[in-house]
Image (tube, rainbow, N blue to C red):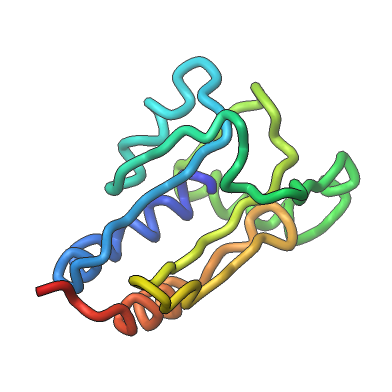
Length: 137
């Protein structure tokens, strides 16, 4: 997840708090000050998954050909214009995603897996899915 998407998801934090739904990020590595630099953009708790177990049995990657895709360039320009910059350190080819996971047996209520870098989730769909989670008493 890039800082821009993290900031967008974090804008939902007050509404998620009212619903009793926590906001988490799972990152695959912490190179240099990467997670520290990410924290100002993300208002939830951040977990480091160095063994990449959360990413599933098959990692979804985009290779160098990703930079030939127009959508990737447009997403990069959009993020840069909003003041978000990344780094070129570490493993940068694994695609991310956003999940809304319900309580108990509800399972996954929303699953958004990036198809290319910068393929952002619709945050109104995130909020809609979060509203399906029953509040704890």
